[in-house]
Length: 157
Length: 157
Image 1: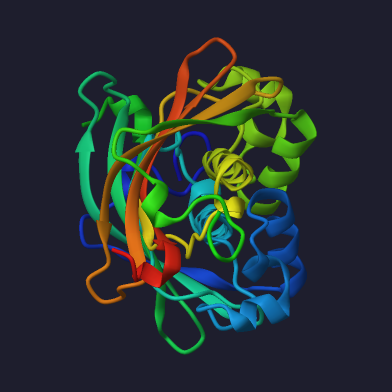
Image 2: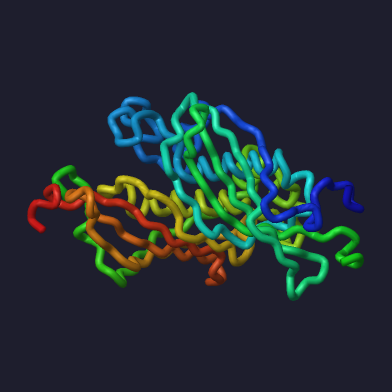
């Protein structure tokens, strides 16, 4: 536990560590709701249009997939951590469609870590996220760098 | 017009072209709704927690910002194009917070284009998206590559 009651601080991440961050079902109505609001292309709004598209079915918009990954990251680690947010995404690849009825699972791998030069109480952790479907096919991968507070304000490091 | 009635095909993009893709208001209730579903961190859910955070107010989740950019891309170009989707994002940087009450505007710049090697009817366009707020401050930038069908199936090229 950190002093603010969180499980994960910068100090707790080790390069090479692999964490299983759980899974979620992808529902038709959630795809359509996201698509209506943010990405109203026919293959994300309508089953028949999805089936007729190269994606082969009603498919989740790319940023809906990324948002679901964020939810799995939140529930699996971020909400129980000293996270201070992420400055950005290094890359994001959509490798296969995520279709209505799929179940997606997220794995996170720690690729690198380094203390902040400007803020001694903070460190940066580079994480790779791999999202798979129920057949074990990798559907999306993303690498980003997340800022975490150190334990004890970094005083013992 | 393309043969399927769309304004934009691969042929119509020129390297260096800059397109204004419009703007949208960012509303409190939309931030909270997105955060509840995908990124339930306190600074995205609650005004007081947002004001107490480094972000300085109720701030849109990073993938909510990306999703709003996608909506501006859809309304400004994608829905009236031969887009076949994007394989991924090359990078995405969140440079400043997007706060409730902000108005965000998107500009798209064509950085590169090349015909597909494997599919003669298709080409790839690398686009840079720059999102600014009502004070003209750049809040987010993203580079991605989008696939577009060519006019006439690429027959006249």
